[in-house]
Length: 383
Image 1 (cartoon, one colour):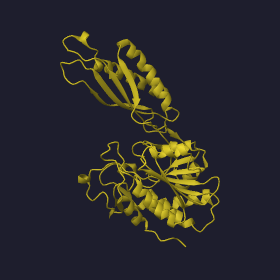
Image 2: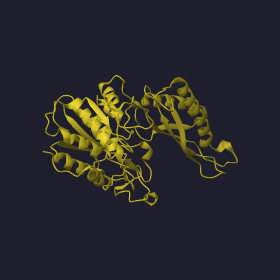
Image 3: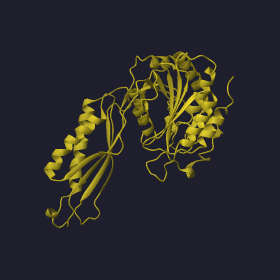
């Protein structure tokens, strides 16, 4: 007999009403443990074996691995528990109160991506009394919106162990099997300040940075000439010069300057190799200008993701939906699932166009089709 839990609206109402913002600014960052504890309570009620995994890097945050059944393979239904920050004054309703209007459920994280957990749980309820041949695992992670520390901790622990994984990010119920990686890097130049009336008194970090920026744009052109993937709307790797800070007064030679930039590699491009190539390019500039130039990563980065098209999982989701697996414009935890050895697809209800903005919502017309699709995958890969 199915254990008594809230309905899907009730579950999402409770999840949305439990704040779990992750942010690189400490004054906005929150723990996700209340969300993890809520999911753990529901899944234990259903008979799942629940493991809560605190993050070594952030002990106040945790992942949840909930397992039904046992065996060497199995299916993971994965989602992240954190949301981005919000501007409450720009919302038409309370971001932490799930509200229904025009067949939409509004609330912070409703589509990105707390809305996937009620879908996964509702689908799992249909199999509680059936003997699973392979385990069904519901996975909830921490800090996807910032550091990806939750997914990194899973890789470090080698958990969970399964054969297939569905990342329930909002894709409008169209499967995706590849996306670009993400790097955010900083270049710091330390020169020598001095009186601007005599350039020989200093070594201008801003002038050196101008040359560095020119070389970065040349590097971008070389990458775009070498790499192209027609599966993406933007078919080439991108490099964006995001922000720059340097100097403090017009009549003072700039002593220090820092540039932050973003690089989005295609599948087949390795972020460690890209960093090494950048370091090699900066060394001659530093030597020529007799100035200190240092590259550092603003966060560890995310490798590009690609699941081969002939994967049984990709074929199954394509057959279920009638859509060919495509490429995403945003990054997910899928590369980490691949690193754990799982065939992975990104597939879930809701649209990324509604994410990260006021009045975020999930279209209720997608919820039952999502439940039905997840049920079909459980039936295929766990029974």
